[in-house]
Image (cartoon, rainbow, N blue to C red):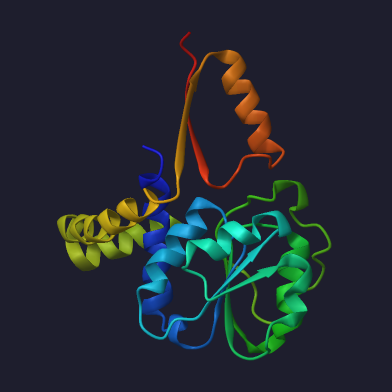
Length: 212
């Protein structure tokens, strides 16, 4: 219930990066590295030989991101310029226009692909973006990828592959993810506002019910 829908998206991200040969052509830089979608995608990519992963995160989440053991390097948003230049792929889960502009400006024409997945930093959407050097960001639309793989493998084949990848990931999260359960309107309101303001610890996952 908590992770399967996000994992589905992460599985498709991993699949596209590998099929297009991007995973083996330089580091994959993932923003909002502490988000569940990013973590699942990084977990899958880290299982592949020769893949270099860079997790971008805020200073307060550095310890968690490093402790996950799936990113080869953890870099704060204000230290993007410390990354080595060269071929790279950007997976943008944050949706922060300033971060996107910083990545595109840093790598320029050497940026192989810029994949826009989500908007965890909704308050910074489009901020400071301007004209972007390098490739135009491409929206990752999971239903299109799902349709392609359903045609390639059949629905049963797709579900089998997802299941094979899901079980190791689910077992791995049991070592660090804390599930917090609560109920009632006030609990839902509190957690909603915490999520909106970025106050939720990435190590936790909330299961809420409106019922008293």
